Length: 191
Image (cartoon, rainbow, N blue to C red):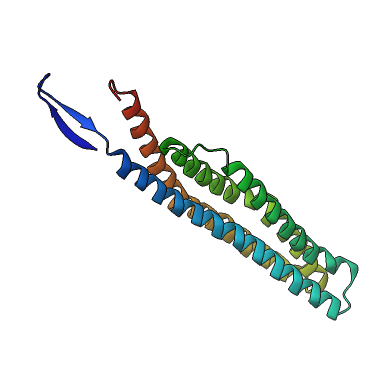
């Protein structure tokens, strides 16, 4: 934003360097898209590797039927993660290739990351922790399974909240601030 003196009205005017603003928005959008891409690829890769390793372990030990549940859940989450990535890529294409469109796209991606992180406790960690609890209970006993759950659940919950509060919400606030600035500039007379 630049301050310009209006000599006709003897008052300051503000002007926005739209190219610099667009570059800043695109840089922020790329950073958010990179975080989202890393999150999705991590979920895909982690679920695949863990599912395969656990399945191979159960096969090698000629495990009981209940021992196949956990690796199967990981492989199902692997397939679901691929589906969510595809669905996310389709939704991103709906934004106009303008300054406001790029900003809305970056905001949508940050909101998507926040939503995924917050919902992860319910749709991902809770089912896995329950299956791990039952599996460890049947194999190692109640104390170990209770200890594992009492350790893993709070770490996952508070770790996810920390990530949202320290990474995604500040990015979201900054993008919303840029959006307000852009909308205000468009509403100014002569814009």
